[in-house]
Image 1 (tube, helix red, strand yellow):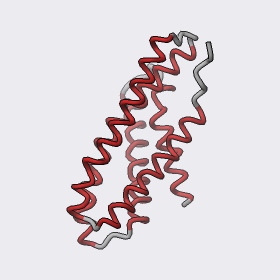
Image 2 (image 1 turned 90 degrees about the vertical axis):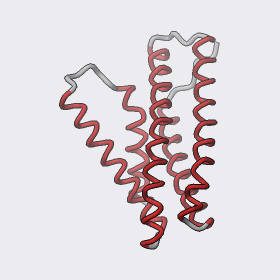
Image 3 (image 1 turned 180 degrees about the horizontal axis):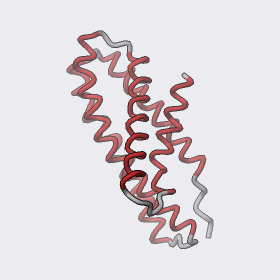
Image 4 (image 1 turned 180 degrees about the vertical axis):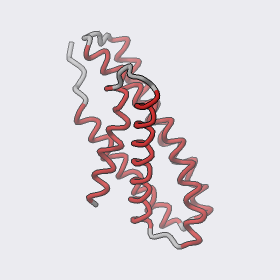
Amino acid sequence: MKITKIVVVLIALLIAAPLFAQNAPSDKPASNKQLLMDKIKADKKLVVAENMQLTEAEAKGFWPVYEAYQKDLGILNDRTAATIKSYAEAWNTKTITNEKAKKMTAEMLAIQADEVKLMKSYVPKLDKVLSAVKVARYLQIENKIRAMVKYELAEGIPLVPGK
């Protein structure tokens, strides 16, 4: 489970990376960021593989669905990162208005709803390649990883100042 914690921290850092982004030359940092992203994805896949206990036949059907799901989840992660970045900028400049707060709240709720919708859309795809027990197990693994990532992110994000 130690590798799971490492993966979670790395994923949280990846999602929060835009907060610390600076205008640096684009050739080397972009490749470094891509290398980090690839490493995190591989580590997460390893955690899933170790915990799924797939047969060869199950693995053949599961991994393409997993990759597609991760790609779609990446879009939601990008939206989350953009919202966190927007919040960080407003926090740092002390410009959190009611309008900005409403907009950020609406976006985070939309992301959460889209995450549930995405998960529901993948259940039938997973059902085609895995037993219901293994589908449930995969969704548990995915939810646990995402919950840990969200915890890591939340721990580093200050509350909106009260007005």
